[in-house]
Length: 120
Length: 110
Image (cartoon, rainbow over all chains, first blue to last red; front, side, top):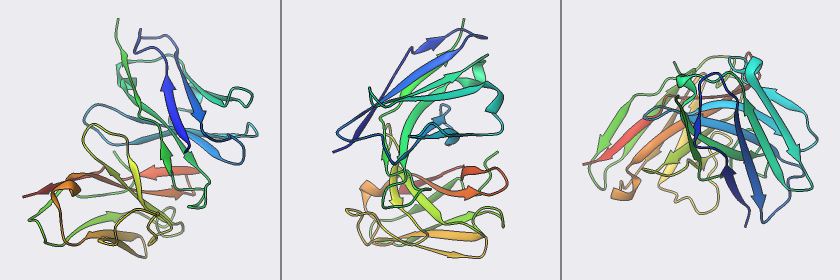
């Protein structure tokens, strides 16, 4: 059974770079789209970007200038970097898989999420 | 401001049928398939419906959805207490070249 686990610092200072890793266990990274989605406290879901296992990326235009995603197939990990963070970036960050039999636009597996707070 | 529009709340008594609407535009729902997610309190979202009307394995047939033009709706029949959750619709948006979500609907089982 494929499982996703997000990890990274729970507290980041304003203007610094948020760095998170999603580790995929129980399955391969290959042939799937891997996304980052965030949810500010008490609010809805916001798409950050996705990466195909080959390394091609797609970012939310509103975050594109600050987002970098990368993949390490040897470690079965997907990484997210979000630069110049502000309090508005405080959220639970989820990694999620798409591209299964349910379609390239359906996120069928999600990590449990990791809370990141931006504060000095 | 979410790209897809959902009512912020919905409610129903156990056993009743409730519907949740999702409205978009020609660049998203009007042209691409829709999915729905259920988020129980304190947990990650779970894929509830995909490709407009399909249920992943394990999702009860009490859940159904439909789509017409640039709008869609999720219906839950035989409402149960464990259905109390937040529900989100999502679709690919051709203008943004990425998926967009609704603002979410909080379902309360009375």
